[in-house]
Length: 126
Image 1: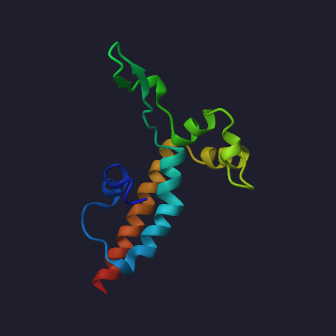
Image 2: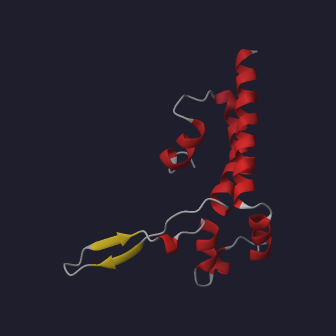
């Protein structure tokens, strides 16, 4: 996740400072339990609409109407169910997406991040 999402996600939440290796497990747990579900199910993203101009050059437009979460975009694809892992259904994913409102999920993410940073700070001081 780090290499592909440095500016948009990782640096926004963790900053630019070096994170010692002994905290990697805490960071990974936070990412799996809080950050990734928030990004996939609750944070809206723009998806471009690509058109060709008269010269054949691609032009991308980011319309407000095209904004959705990555999960909503994935679900809207034709035959999206065929790309789900075995044992995973849209019913399961819908339950996860609807478990919290977008605002509640953002608040839970911030609370979990505070706990994470407090834990790291306490372990650094000790």
